[in-house]
Amino acid sequence: MQNKENNEVKICTRCKREINCYDKTCYYCGEEFEVEYPDERAAYIQKNIGTYLRKFNKIDSGDKASSWNWCAFLFTVDWLVYRKMYKLAVIVLVATVVIDLVAQLVFFSVISNELAASLLSNFVTIAYCVFIGIMGDRWYKTRIDKLVEESAGIPDEEKQQHYKKGGTNIIAVIVMVLLAGTINLLLP
Image (cartoon, rainbow, N blue to C red):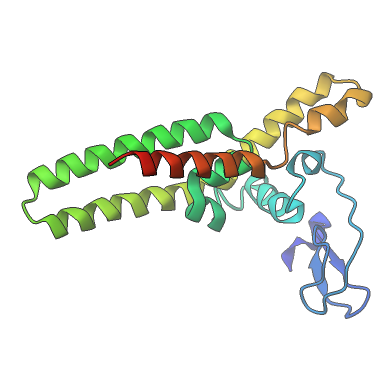
């Protein structure tokens, strides 16, 4: 690994191979480690800390402008809600509805072939999901960095409460999925 200069690697105590310093488990032998994250962003990420810190550090260092996030690609709005990016989730949800309606109106009115219009509409949806998959980590990094910046003036005894603004919210995702399912049942 080329990250030796940045202290982003460590040596597994069991198999003696280099692994990323953020990993809690060696992916070669399965050895488990206690990991102390010096980065305050870890307190806000809370789940998959190693993965996100690794991605954030690549973005910070200029190695990558963005990265790929399979969950953001596959679950788009659900992933945004899960990672507590509620405003962005609403914006993306509204954009999704508008893009889908416009695509269907344009494709079905311009193209007389219903199958071709449907395929083009699906292509637009896939392109939108790819965009979310590419931008998801950058958006999440921006949110986490903003939370860290906000915490600068907060006394240490109040920081634990502030850390709760980060993390994940599976309950909100379940509520959203149930609400969407109910709406789909009620609509013809």
